[in-house]
Each structure stands twice: as structure tokens, then as C-alpha cells.
Length: 189
Ligand SMILES: Nc1nc2c(c(=O)[nH]1)N[C@H]1C(S)=C(S)[C@@H](COP(=O)(O)O)O[C@H]1N2
Ligand SMILES: [Mo]
Image (tube, rainbow, N blue to C red; front, side):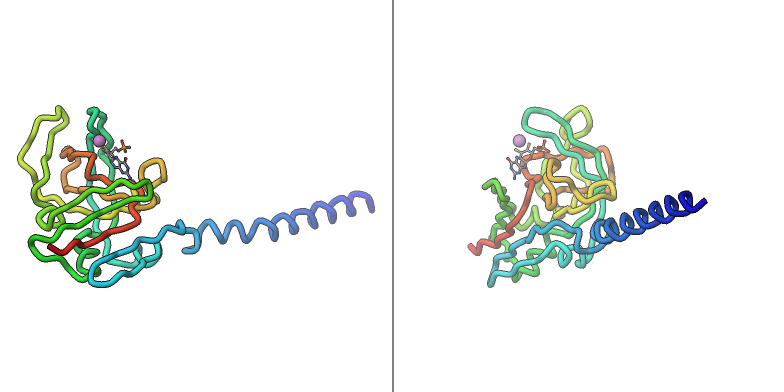
């Protein structure tokens, strides 16, 4: 009887140690501290750095994104959530009509957008057969979530430039979908 009791107490002790040891891990995976340590630099009139939680605290928009790579591989459609590029440009001090927006990434990739494109105009759009179609309303966002989950690194996360629509069948060119974005710069003309 005593042996059984001792075994029970030992088991209970191990259980408590286990729970205490695992608890910080559990808290870490659900808290705000869990967002990637990935900053975004906004450069315009002056330079500012936004942390990932700061970016997530900005007004968010959502829509469908579907892209095609230069070699014809389609990616999507997926549901994306993020911040309007136009809002980030405003935070950087705004842009005039002839200014250009440089969006660049960790690996050195750079894509340049004019102010019409920042507002979703002037992109080519395609249907599922890659036939060009008239563009529906488009919005350009810096996405941090894909299908309700943080955008994975292999998908271009934590921050990827994505063109979204209300329609899941609209395809845009992958070359402007900058992966691993870490800098947005307003170039004054
Ligand atoms: N940072 C970064 N983003 C990038 C690229 C790149 O080389 N580096 N390639 C672009 C091009 S040309 C295409 S077609 C798509 C490819 O996206 P995928 O890797 O999700 O297929 O990413 C775009 N974004
Ligand atoms: Mo591409």
C-alpha cells in the first residue's frame, strides 16, 4: 500500500515538474511576443522602423491573392490579410504623382511601383487560362497572414507584397509580389 502511494506521489511530482517546465513554452507560442522579429523600414521624408506587432496594429484589409510566376506556375488563390501599401506610403510622408515607391527585400530583390500602382491601378490581370482580362478593383497590400495563419518564410513571409481582389479567380504577375519585404522607400522625382 505504501509502495503504491509512493509511486503515486512520484508520478504526481513528475507531472507537476513537467507542467511547470512546459508552461513558459505554452505562453510563448500564444503571446504577442511570438511574432517574428522582422522589422519594416519606411523611408521617405525621414526614416522609421516598424516592428511586426506595430504593423499588425495598423488598419488591416483582406482579399484574395493569386499570382503567376514568369515560368507560368500559379500560386493561389489564397486569402491574404495585411496593411495597404498606400497607408505605409502615407506614413513615410506621402508620395506625389511622379514619385516612385521602391519595395525591397532581404535577398536584394527590388520592385518599383508608381503611384497609380500603389492605388491598385496599372496592373495586368489574367484568368485561370492565363488569358488577359480587364482588371477588377485591385489593392496592393503588405501581407502578414495567409489563410488565417502567419505567412510562412517559404511563401515569402513574414512580409510579402500581395495584390488582392474580391474575386478569387483573378491572377496577377508574381514579379511584383516581393517576398521577405524589409524596406519601403519613397523616391522623390
Ligand atoms: N524577395 C524576392 N521576392 C520575389 C522574387 C525574388 O527573387 N526575391 N522573385 C519574384 C518573382 S520574379 C516571382 S515570379 C515570384 C515567385 O514567387 P514564388 O516563389 O512564390 O513562386 O516572386 C517574386 N518575389
Ligand atoms: Mo518571376
